[in-house]
Length: 350
Image 1 (cartoon, rainbow, N blue to C red):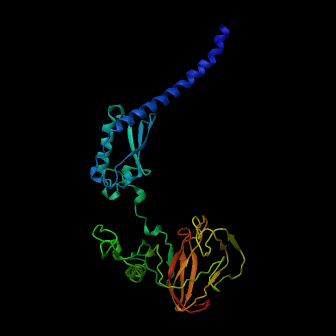
Image 2 (image 1 turned 45 degrees about the vertical axis):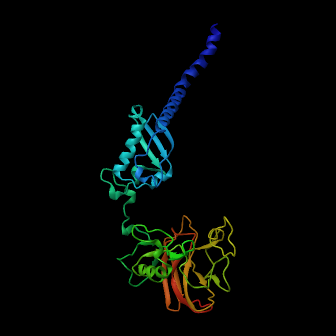
Image 3 (image 1 turned 180 degrees about the vertical axis):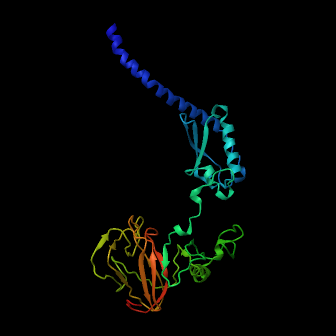
C-alpha cells in the first residue's frame, strides 16, 4: 500500500504544478468568450460614418496579467476621420457594452495596426499627446533625391521639397449619357480630371521644378516618340555603355534589363544586372535616331550600401548639366533628371 502511494505521489505533484496554468488558460478563454458574447449586440455610435464602413470586430484577446483587453477591428475602421471626442465616444460604447465585469480592464482598440487614438491628426489633438513621428522634418535633415548642380543653387522657395504629381485625362465621352464629362466626381471643390497632361507636363511640373522642387510623376512625361536605352546588359540600336578604365568594377546581379515582352511576375528592374565602380566613370552613349528633345531617366538597384551622392553629367546641344543623385532611395524604377535637346547619332559630348 505504501509503495503504491509513493508511486502515485510524483504524478499527483506534477498534476498540482500544472493545474494553476491550465486553470488560468481556461479562465482567460472563458472571459474572452464572455466578452465576445457581450459585444455581439454592440452598435457603432459613429453612425454618421457608416457610409465609409460599418466597423466589425475581427478578434479579441484578454491579457489578465496585464489587465488588458485588446479588440482588433477590420482595417476599414482606420478610414474614419477620428477626432478626440469621437475616440472617446467609440471607446465608451464598447466599455458600456462589456459591462461591469470588464470595468477594471484597459481596453485597447486596434485597426490596421494602429490604435484609434493614433489616427487623430496632431492638428486636432488637445488632450492626446502629439505624435512626434508626424512632425515635419527640419530642412537641414532632408535628403534630396535629385539635386541639380548649379553655380547659383536655390536656398528657398520649394528647394528640398518633393512633390508627387499625377496628370489626368480631362474630359471623356460617356456614351450612355451621350455627352462629354469628367470621369471622377467633385471633391472638396475641385475635380481631379481638370489637371490634364497638356497643362501638367509643359507648365505645372516645370514651374514647380524651377521653384526648386523635385517632382515625381508616375506616368510617362516625355512626348518624344523615340525611345533610346543604354545599359550594361542590352541597349537599343548602336548605343554604347563604356567604362573609362574597367578596373575596380563589381557586377551586381540586380538591375534593369531591356526586354520586348514583360510577363506576369517579371520585373525588368530586378532581372538584369548592374555595375558598381569605385574609381571609374561610366559613359552612356545613346544612338539618337533624330534630333529633338528627350527626357533623360536613370535607374539603379536599391542596395544597403548605395552612395548618397552619385554624380551624373548629361551632355547635350546646350552644354553639360550635372546632377547629384541620392541612390539610397528611389531605386528599381526610372528617376527623371531632365529634358534635353540632342543631335542625331552618337555624340558623346552632346
